[in-house]
Length: 296
Image 1 (cartoon, rainbow, N blue to C red):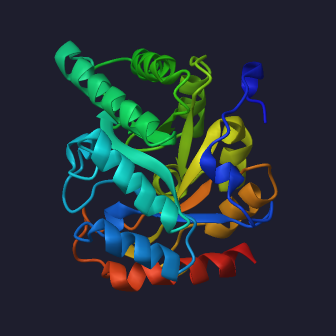
Image 2 (image 1 turned 60 degrees about the vertical axis):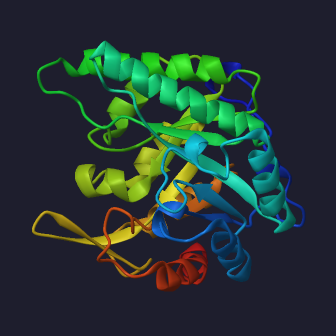
Image 3 (image 1 turned 120 degrees about the vertical axis):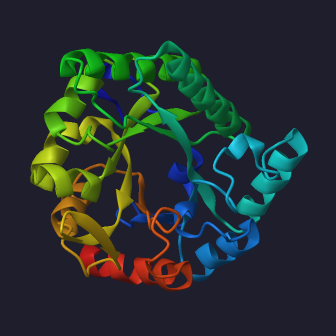
């Protein structure tokens, strides 16, 4: 598969999962949804409910993954990798907390350094995606200036990831959820090992843009998706099980299904940020069945 500008896409382990037909969706879930679970329970649940991978966004409260006992030494990384592989699963991505919008040079460098540690960890795991994100578009600055700074950060991280079998993916997140703004960022990035995580609901709940139109614009850059559902009341999100909310998931998934998209459909149940929502023992088993109903 080639990207805009002729760059060649990386081949990652999940692209070679045995027995998966071309049109069978690859399912994963983010560990954001089970913040108290140990790795063993995460893996066993993924296998039991027929997931293909896991997206690691913290383990048992530790969001800075390179500091987790599971990844804090070469031997620990080797053992963790073996456990995941033995379960027949892959790591769909590592979720960092690195933000790209900061103008303050100290904050900016700290966030870029954090992302680079995640890139190094991803490389030591054999290669996978690393999530970064913009959060704010500061009102005291012109939007074009902020978008350029976000692009510069993604470019720097993509250059750092070169040759490591790692792709740095910017999530459609925070205030960067309008497709034209996202496109303006991506057009400034030339590093081939970069792309987007399309958080369908994060975008739609703010912009109300048609997912089919969003996908048509951003398709060349999308390598991973975040799937969730919610009902918005009084300006606040009320996250619900898949298919029970307002998210236009059918339109988005139909667009992805009809394309050459080969990435994961990753369930992002935001239990860590919203402890009041359903327990992971309920939500994570529900997702594959609910997703396949939408898939058709």
